[in-house]
Amino acid sequence: MKRSDIIFTIVFIGLFVPFFLSEKLYEFFVRFSTDRAFTASFIKFAMLATMGEMLGSRLRKGIYLPEGFALIYRAVVWGFLGMTVKAAFMIFGGGVPLIVSYLGMENPQAVMAGPVTGARVLLAFAISAFLNIFYAPVLMVTHRVSDLHIAAAGGDRRKLLKMPDVTGLLASIDWNSMWGIVLKKSIPFFWIPAQTVNFLLPEEFRILVAAFYSTVLGVILALAAGAGESQQGNFRLPILK
Image 1 (cartoon, one colour):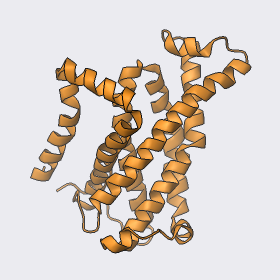
Image 2: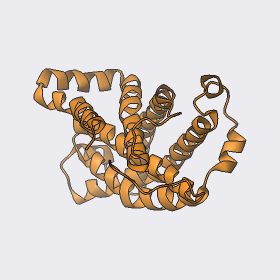
Image 3: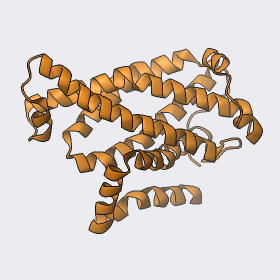
């Protein structure tokens, strides 16, 4: 294990541990995440999802910050994507219970707020399924476009700040890896079950779990990008030196 691995691990753990050791810090975190929900989502995703991409880079290339990684740009993009995730949670978390109430479930809001029962599990699964089927693909494709824009800029800040060629970038996406890894596999086999569990937790714990999931998302998208490179002969097996 390299010194960079030790530092990365300490920083990552350090972002979570204080909130378990200090009740005041945890109460502040919960209050800030409630009162400044979109700002908190920006910060959490900017930090944790970017760290996920750094970890994905470490697994693929053996280094956390390769040349042209554009750390600040990635963090800002993830921050704004995190705000859309918060909005999606609000939309689907409120909209799906309304839908199932029309299908016959009585008072689904009370079901979600009550103890874990079969009805609550089904409702949490429905929310997660709608969220991941209708919103998650948009998030993941948008991120891939941003990732390709960073690669095309080659570390040039002026190019990074220009309007991306969205049409060209969409055409250059490796849809085999995007569909085969990110959409077809990760959504049904990881994200829907994972978010189902998240919606079964007390609301204050969902905040921390969603933040952790953003790191996993960063890793998945980074590895999927690497899988696309492998088809062009540029990909190497994950290495840890």
